[in-house]
Length: 242
Image (cartoon, rainbow, N blue to C red; front, side, top):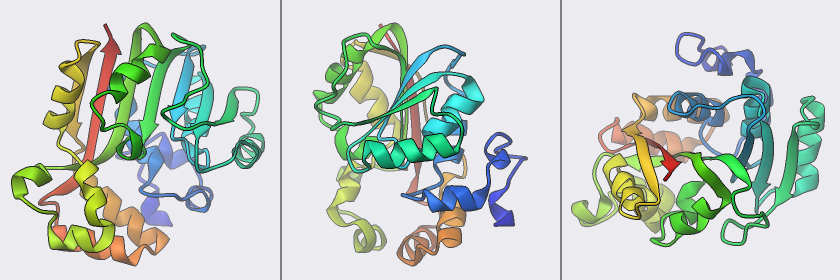
């Protein structure tokens, strides 16, 4: 547990109980990813933010507490009642609203949000050419979009196949893991947004490995150890609506 408190690298996240976060585990440490991504955004108190693919709610709690924003936590896999219980326990129920929603059928009015963030979820629904044009409808002009997703240093299409150590764990789904350059082009070609940052998280694979060891995800640990940071990491991308 002590290894998961890292004030030198993640000062905000280090204020949160690692046991609490592990209890909400659905993948790599979401607060580390969000804290890093937030450095490329300008989140201010009173903003209305959509947390898309919010899981069990850790990122929504973090957004409300750390930035004073009003959050709509939308997820398809986790029911609104389960997420709402987390928000009540964390004391943010007055600032976070849980909604069960599928990412392609969002139940919101157009231009409803000042920002949309998505942590370790966009790879499941956001890679299609037409998804960004759909999603930005829900942002006001000048609104911000930011996401963190498993990333690659090279495109799998360029490699010609999913590398064996990755295929053994995630199979064909790794085709949705892309380089920052791929995401930059995918978003900028629409001319609907201006990309403000597109980067591979520094030492992201090490963070992923540290977290996977802590939660006992042995197959992922093996995958990351075999990779050694050669191919795997996290892509962080942010943009503003044109």
